[in-house]
Image: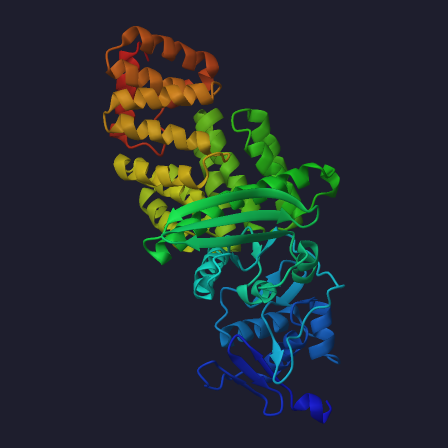
Length: 522
């Protein structure tokens, strides 16, 4: 190493790395200890900030004359993340099965930022990647800059909670602030497929936020919206707008990813794409063949990447759906399979909120509602904006005797994902919550809405019949009972011949009471 290089001082995220002294200083000025190889690897990342480094490149640079295992790299990466307080991987990011990217603004003391060449496009991660640019302050008042920055920053923070997305850190995406940018160039430099940009105009007591999500590959706008709010509390407005944007763009990204996967031949699908194809079939909800096709795609995804937690979670969901919608008579075996896949998902990624929520549902459906509530609470802690986590909490609460609290969780789940593949589940649990409260009028009305939305779903007719039976409207109840038998006699008989594991005995008897009043002779 020449003298000039050895005297280099790097600065990033408040840290200072001095090559000449061989030290790493924390933003609080305390020296951070690092083993020699971990220090060398951090230097390598800093000199290649923004670029993907695969394990072969790292091996050749750090251990040029020695053969080492992957564990050596993993341990050094762990040391670096611990030193940088980066357990959430906002700075040093793992690109699954490819390598690592040091995703932070890096400067050399007295020089400009080390930037990736505009000509060189970074490779895309396996999962959907997104950069949120600093929102433009249109207010004409520089004092309002903090407000527009705060909205974009809140969106980045909340999007980062989702394990389904690769989210570029604020320090990288905000480097384009105040510049007229070409979205395709930005996407290439940051290595992302989607870019979210927006503007904020604050005037008097109101604020208007406009946001749009762009597919950088095609240049198409896949989502855009405008939000008008009265400003009473700045931070409350930032939270409200950020939540509204996240609620809208996550389904938009997943829909775009499914469409992308659907265009590829099945034999050319990777783990992520096979997972997306499976989600499309899972979203069809009622046809049993779609559930089977979804399971097949999820199995292919796991075969390609055995540690891919989302596909393991989704496999568990197919077994739960089969147990509740089609094969209730074999539900015990199906639920054991569901729990097994859900636990494998959690083992693969303990910090995945969706995996924890899936396990919450799986154990609740075996009657273990205490663990179900605990797992659902953990999922919500990991990602408060997960509709699936709110649904898992509702499931555990409802079948453990708390229908009112369950309905509150369902309302939040519906708000976060009103048109997702599990919207019918939300409706069914809402019906049950009213029925268990003995508000049969609302139960019957909710069940009729479910029938109108999903006429092939047997459960809706069963609850219409039970609620109307309790109301003494025998003739209408009997019609609904007959319809439930016509739609799926197997599922109906499965529910009434044996108590499902997730029902408390008193709730199950309550359901049978309504069905007998509707004319059921079993």
